[in-house]
Length: 139
Image (cartoon, rainbow, N blue to C red; front, side):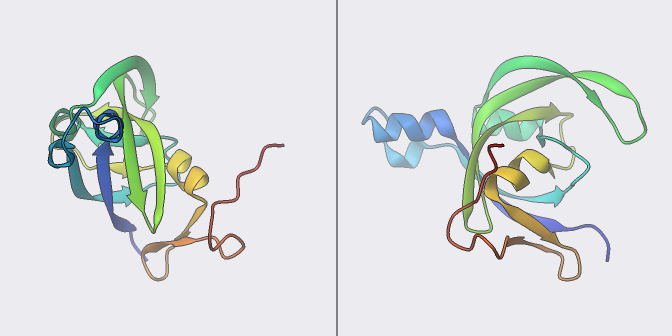
């Protein structure tokens, strides 16, 4: 089966808000399309530092991250970024990874967008029970 990679559209949420309020022209919204590895073992979205800088995301806080090999490291958390994938959109923060590292799409985006990993076809799909809008649990 291998790893699942998907192409996502990323956008600086603050820029989009400025466009909506009439303070920024549409063509100045910082955005990128990138391939990300879908990692159900990761909680958050992780974007490399160079991509975070290109999107103009601001540092929000710091967090200790635990890697797959159990190493722990302090990393910046930046945001807010809009993630568009599989026809769904989520606004979230992201862990700032080392420059040039591979972006990871974690559980928060998958849950909020109500997406499932289709390993056999190496893609993300909308949960069949919620084809039009995400269904979110509040219990």
